[in-house]
Length: 87
Image (cartoon, rainbow, N blue to C red; front, side):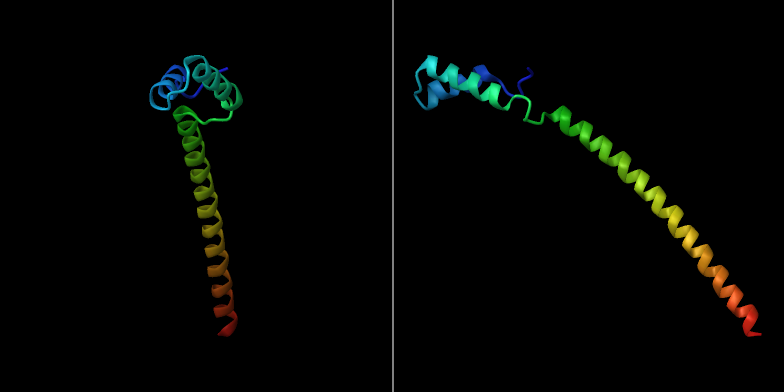
């Protein structure tokens, strides 16, 4: 299981700053890693998501441009048709 943080540093911080005994600090770090390991997004996960979102936004922009162009052409056609019948 990949861990998104440094468990050794986590345990050392608990030991040094919170004065948690070494064995408890290591146990807490291991438990935290096991409980959250596959639920924490890494920078790589976020970058991949960003790239997928940018691609999807590009697709939506393209579809919107096609739709807008189509609607504009239909509107122009209707106006031209109405002007022909008005004369």
